[in-house]
Image 1: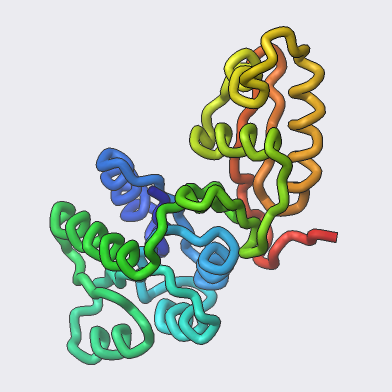
Image 2: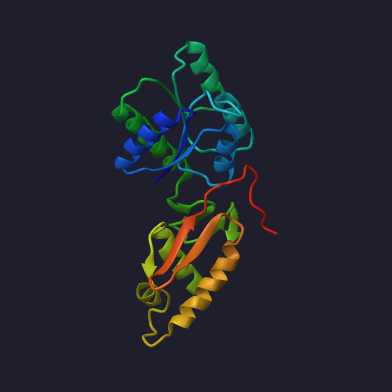
Length: 233
C-alpha cells in the first residue's frame, strides 16, 4: 500500500518511513513541495502525509493546488504547528485530517487506515499500482497516467503478473505458464516478444519493465529526477 511522505527533516522522515514500512506500507519520501505535487499528479499514492514546512511550495500551497486540480488523494497533515488557525487553514485548504507532532505511531497508523477506508468506500474499487500505472482489480483494466492502456490478452497476463509482484523479479518459467497457460512447448523467445511490446507501451512513463539476465523480468517505478512529467513523445 503506497504512501507519500512529505517531510522536510531527513532524520524524522527516515525514522517515520521505517516505522510505517514495518507496518506494511510502501513509503515514498519527498522534501520539496513541487516534487510532492508531481507525485500526487502522476504517481497517485493511496494517501499522503504532509508536513506544512516544505522547501519550494509549502504544505498549504500543495493542498490548494492539489484540490484545485481535482486530485482526491487522502492527505493527512502531520506538523509541529499546533495552533488552531493552522489546523483550520489546512482543513479548509483540503486536508482530510491533521495530527500534531510529537505523535504516537499507533494513532498515526489508525488515522491513515481510517482515511484509506473512507477513500475506498468513496472510490468503490481496488487497484494495484506501480508509479503511473494502475490496474482496476475488479474490471481488469489498466490505466497509464490516467489514460486507458490498450493491451492484448497475453500482454495483459504478463503485465498483471508483474504488477502484482512489482519490485520483485519473476522467473521466465513462471511467466511462461502465466502468459501461455495452454502451450507447454512454447519457447522463451515468445515471452521476449510480449515483453518487448509491453516495454514500448510503457516507454517514457516512469514505469519500466526490466530484463534480468538469467533470472526473468521485473516491473518497477523509476526514480523521479525531474519536476516536470516525462515526455511521452
